[in-house]
Structures are given as structure tokens and as C-alpha cells.
Image (cartoon, rainbow, N blue to C red; front, side, top):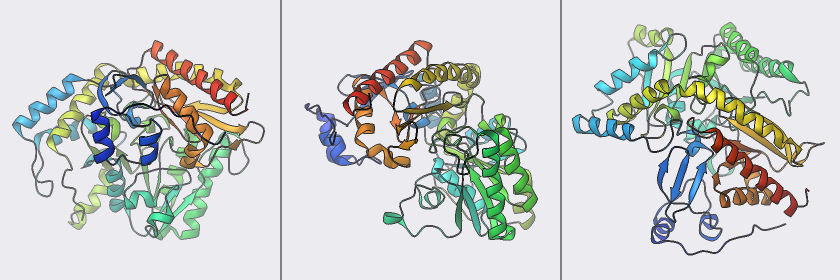
Length: 452
């Protein structure tokens, strides 16, 4: 089947304005204008979104792994309004504000180890850029399949970067294998395969020269690499390797953090404290743009000893209204025990998804907390994929599957794997309905494309 079936409909006035004036991130214009792909959302409540046409959708991706406490939290809006009335902004170059100070104190009580100093930013890409500038000497080692953002420096350490359009990228970045128990680079199963990926980091450090490597960076569980959950021993070994060679360890919690994997931060599940940790997304659950880099005192002490400032300034870093949103968001996460709820509901969701293994295009199912993935393949025996990384999204089968799910009221993302990462407030009934939609959509798409 070469093309995707389309539904012709009339665009509303607001949708026409969107097509004329808004440049949607990462979407092709023809997909929006000619394939009924445009969605102008006007309201959210819990796990549901409502568009300008009055249609209702289950948000299977928490926006973009962001809205951890769910949509429509009036108390966050009220906290933001109160802060805006009192003080919205002071210069990030010379001052701070009360809300930023309070947020730093709250975060210091949540982050692992001695990560109690925070450089505030506006988003995850900025947090990664900031972490690299704090850490950078000469070279940075990242992992294949990893994603760390779309700004230039963050894209430089993202393995799916587009050299054709944006290269040459930042000098001094190399990539090593990432844990993948479905297609391990060394052909070794289980924890042993994970540990070989860790040893590859040490080999790369030695090859580059320990004195020239600033940092190793990775997500505790990489969503962009389809949610492969490594053994705790993997991260513990990476920590040992970094300590042995005097290399900083940066763990990217932009997606993993604030309850997504079943604990406040995913690092807690691996028994490791990094030297730097980035956070964003769930920090405010999307109610305001905010991110941060957490660093340990030993690292910050070097700046104090040398009496130098970090040569890095972000105009909206620690903006007061965003900090107020984050404070109220964290209060909700703790009050409603949403990290624990994520762990419980995640086990339930993963159990239901395991039942999809009978589908001819389902190769693997995996996840941690409310961060689950169903890997899709053309052939179970060979594990042949529909494409590598984000490129898989352009395959007609994947596009048709997405269309079928949206028609039935489920919004999510499908690259090599179908992602289900709903808000942490999701109910069992909503999980049941999501999985039912996925099941039905897979069956229809598989029949259309001759897999069943």
C-alpha cells in the first residue's frame, strides 16, 4: 500500500489561521493541510484533550512526555497569576527572585546525593547546552540512539542529528552503543549485554585520552532509543568508569524525571548519583517553560575556588512565574503521590501491552513506570524494522497506524516503537481504552498491509 487513506473535511476558521500563520514544529505542511493532520487544541482535562472541532482525545504521550500532573490544573494557573501580580521578572544576569530561591530549596530536598545547586533554564535543550558548557573541556561521549534536544549543541550529541541540513556539528563528540536487549550490538543477551555497552564507554575514553574527555551523557532510560531499560549494574559500572578516569557523568532526566518512571527521578532506580543532572518537562508539567541543571557541590566548588563566573546567560532562566508553576506542580506530585501511582499504573499498562505480542508486527514490549513502548517490526524472525529511529515514522504502515489511532481518539507517537506515556493521573479505565484502541488499530493496519 503506497499511500495513506485520507479523510477530506472542512477546516474551521481557527484551523485555517493556524495553517496560514503557525509553523508547527517537526511537521510537514502537506501532512497538516492535506492529510487531516492538523489539530488545534483548545482545552485539556486530566488525560483528555479537546480540539477546535469539538473532538476528544486521550493524550497517550502527555503532550510530549511533559504533562505529568494532567491537563487543566487550575491551582497551577492560580499560583502563576499570583506570582505575576507580585513580580514576573528580574535580570537573570545579576539577581534572582523569591520563587527561584524557594524552588531551588525544594529541589535540593528531592534530587539524589549532593545535587543541590541549580542553574535554571527555559527548556530541556537549554539544560543540555548548559550542562555541556559547565562540563566541557575537549570531548563528550554520548550514546547511539540518544536524544538530547534540538539546539545546535544538544543536537550535536544526538545520534539522529541531520548532517545534511545542519552540519558540521560541534567538534569532539563520539557515540558508543546503548543498552538494547532486543538488538544488542554485541549479540549478547540480558545484563551481560548491558555491561558490554558500559565497557564500550571505557574503551572510547581510553581511545580519546582521559585527559581530553569532559563528560559522558545519557538518559537513564532513553525514550528516543525506544525505552530499553538497562540493568542497574550498567549505570553503576558507568559511574565507576567515569570515576576511574576523572570524567564527569551527566544524566539527562528531562523526560525521565518527576515521577515518569515510578520514582521522582529515574536515577533512584539505578543506585547512581551523577555529577550533573538535567531536568525539564515534568518540572512544571508544561504549565510554564522551565528547566534546570543540578550540580554537586564538588563541581560548583571549582568555580568558587577559581572565582570565575559561568560564561553563560539565559534571559529567562529562573523566571519567577515559571518557578511558581514548578513549585505548585511539585506540590501536586507529592500530595497525590503521583510517582508511586506511575509505578502502579505502569505495571498494569505494561501487562496489558504484553498481550499485544500476538500481533504479527509487534516485536517487543518494554517500559518502566508510565513510559512504555511497543516495538514494531516487518518480520519477527529477522527483527527487520520499518525504519531506523525517527525515519520509521514516514513508512506508510506507521503513518496508517497513527491515523487509525487518532480516528479512534488516541494521540501518541510511533517511530520504531509505539510510545504510551500518558499523564500520571491516568485511570485504569483510560488505560484499558488506550490499549483497546492500539489493539484494534494494529489489527486493521496489519490486514490492510498484508501482515495478517
